[in-house]
Length: 62
Image (cartoon, rainbow, N blue to C red; front, side):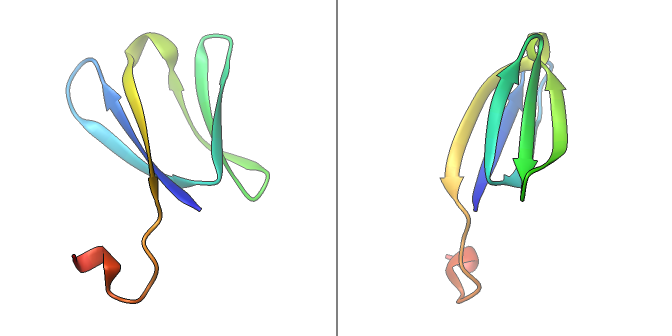
């Protein structure tokens, strides 16, 4: 699983734990285990960064 940092052009960001994302028309959609879990209107999205999801072995604290 990955964590996607979605930076918005109005300021701020959301962190979405998902398997993948895709652009569908005017929307960015995020999926986990085959189900859509989040969507953002494309005009509001400034940047999407993909990161590895930290394992539960203390990596998140580093």
